[in-house]
Image (cartoon, rainbow, N blue to C red):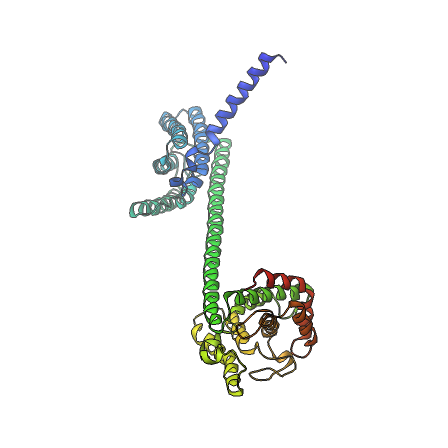
Amino acid sequence: MSKDKKVSSQKKGNAKNRIIDFFTGVPSYNEDKDYTNYSSFSAPLNMFFLACLLLHSTYMGVFSYMKIPLMLALDAVCVILYAAFVIILKNVKGSWIVCTFASAVEIYVHQVCTVRFFGLSPGFHYLLFPLVFMSVFIRKKGKLYTFLRRTMIAIAFLTFMYLAVFFSEYKPIYQLQNWLNTILVIVNCTISFLVTVIFVSRVVYSLDEKRSELDTSVNEKVNEIEEMQNQIIISFANIIEARDGSTGKHVKRTSEYVEALVKELKRNGDFEDILDENYMHDTMLSAPLHDIGKITIPDAILTKAGRLTESEFETIKKHTINGKEIIEESMSDIENENFLKIAKSVALYHHECWDGSGYPYGIQGDEIPLCARIMTIADYFDALVAKRSYKAALPTSVVFDNIKEQRGKKFDPVVTDAFLRIRDQIDEIAKANAD
């Protein structure tokens, strides 16, 4: 093929593509942010206008064959109108409003006229159904649009019922030949079905799209609220911890220890009947609240540099019970009952020991909730490796050896094994968040 022929062929191909795109493509103004509520309507409406254009062109052939000048003229006007609608819809933003209602009026008039001339047999009246689905897309707010939307639906149904009831035994002015009648029934029913399917699919697609957007929006808001809640909890815990000489790093470290530990337990398949995603999440969220009861302990005892008396130690022990009561009272409005249950257990039982030597109740083994057993080892480790005004920090290697010795005594054996398996990770957390 010569170069000139190739160029000519490309030009013809481009021209053909431009014509096809003009009639079937989506208007460029669909991207306009002010038009986003109606952009999904322009494509099916454009297809509807094209279908009506072809349909009325077919009618023109039928009425020309039957020599009915009135209907021929009516459908010629319809062909011109729908061709104009396609062009206007493609180029004029917001034109769908006028075009939709003009199309509705045309359909009402045309169906009444055709049934009057030819009766119900050719199925012209079925074309009223797409109007019902077209009206669904008129989503603009306001009394006028609500009225017009409802009016379209009401008139479509009333017109259909009127035609179906009063013209059921009507003898039409023109008798169609059987073959022509059959063709028209097939054409009208097919067009009605296809147009209805197009709009129904767009309704379903629109609903799915809105549902997806709503789910995304809800999830984002839930995450924002949860993050805000977490920050409030952490800030509150930091204030409380600061009273006994601790820093905010204690809350951060213990929370990260707990997170690393529950993930290791989950990875290893430990406590499968308890440790699901929700339990893990609530345990990690509860970790900063483990010492919330310290807010009730007098400063003279809480910040004492020397050894506590027996009476003072008994007072310190009460922070567990007090912590549980504070959570119970201050967070009673929180709807997440599982979180509240775990938070109260962490605060109340995080000083209980596996062998029953802990406080406040001296319970042992599996009587201690898993979340508290996890918190116990994390809190113990940080208490020894962190520097305080009344004690020096111990090397992590010494603390790990100490924890290993306390396996099955102070600590749950399974939890201890998991903690020791992630020794390097725990060490990194301690160093990264050192005071």
